[in-house]
Length: 259
Image 1 (cartoon, rainbow, N blue to C red):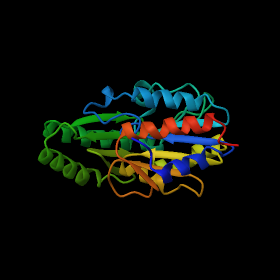
Image 2 (cartoon, rainbow, N blue to C red):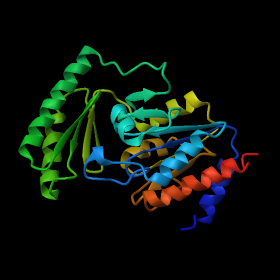
Image 3 (spheres, rainbow, N blue to C red):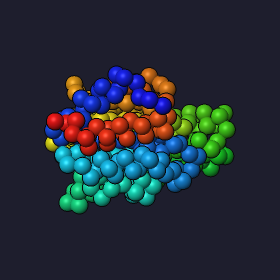
Image 4 (cartoon, rainbow, N blue to C red):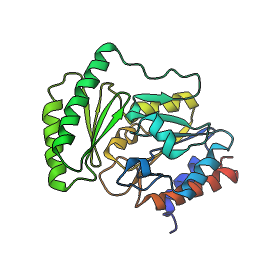
């Protein structure tokens, strides 16, 4: 499938920027969505394109995901130089000298109480699952019947609302809780500053990615993968279609389009 002319023109302009940051969501963007999070893997052609971009001069690659960093590393197998934002911005890896996430005693207690709530919800709703993260806990409903999923999310929201200081966010068949208030927009700002980027390509498929889409500046490109309201300037239908975007950017950046 050929890229739309306006998207290709925007990529050509982006490829000329002095220092490019390519910051990408993982699930639903580099990798198709799957029922079991641990089974996700990047599309081979997208993985190859990301590695090619990571090897180019004046080009920084990054992954920015709702996953915990350990989970992201395990499934994405990113190039060693690729920076990472995990847990929707609560975890940051910009190099080996970065400080790991550290919770206060109050945050540790709050996380434990949130885990207790989600564990009770999962026990009472067949097909739902729990995922533990360094800064919080996630209720997964992708493998539950629709009515069970709705009931589980409603019950979880009611109980979690009673915990002061907890951030609760909806995603695609997930309910995310965190004791650290952060989002992908804040994460992208960290990546932009750390890389010294003069322009950014950001792509994502979920409502949580819209925090980052809304921070993009003139000269940046935002791409939404799949349907849904978005602040991104461009939309492509599937992760497979997004592969073509990455391959085009590799070609343009490699061929000297950045002047």
